[in-house]
Structures are given as structure tokens and as C-alpha cells.
Image (tube, rainbow, N blue to C red; front, side, top):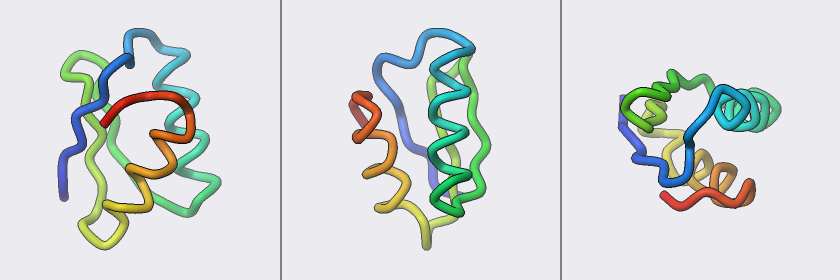
Length: 59
């Protein structure tokens, strides 16, 4: 798993938005609000970053 640090993720709604977007893109992820991170398989790393950035977060 690769870890993506997500700036601006500060509440449960942020986690839900990211989770929903990644699921829609077919990407399995583990999201930690406490650590402000998203863990994804390395094969999905760039696509996951793109999806998260499209939501307005910085990675």
C-alpha cells in the first residue's frame, strides 16, 4: 500500500467524499481522518491522487 497525505481533510464528510470518489473510480482505499492519509495499492496511486485533487484537496 502507498500512503497519500491529504491536506484539507478535516471531517467525516471529507472522508466520505474521498471514499465515494475512489469507490466510483474502482479504487480500494483505507482512509485515516486522524492521520489525514489515504492508503491505496501502488497500481492505483496516480489515479487516486487525481481523484482526490479533483475534489479540491491537495496531495
